[in-house]
Image (cartoon, rainbow, N blue to C red; front, side, top):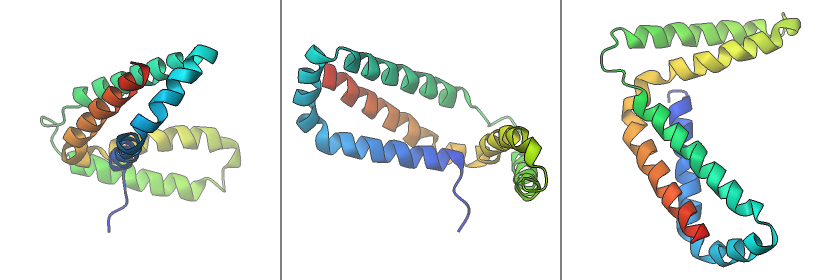
Length: 138
């Protein structure tokens, strides 16, 4: 089984969040509305979450990989880079922050070839979650 990548992980987390909201939005809506009169920041939390989801959606929509040749080779390169960095981490403890920064970029790049497989799902999940979040404030 191939290693799960960043985009599949994102899809899975969004699916879990959406499933939770599907099952519980009617139950938690009265509590959120009651809390909003005591703690108005709960609406700010929801608004900021909606804003972040919108930014995430824009970033995913802007990733058009169709014109990039040899993307699989770049993905293999970044996977090998990740292997090297993980193996080097214990030998270079003073470079842990730098290694983690490079690993984060490598995670994004190495998952790109599978993005097209989950892109539509991710965008649909974001839309559904935003709809649920807006309904909590209504």
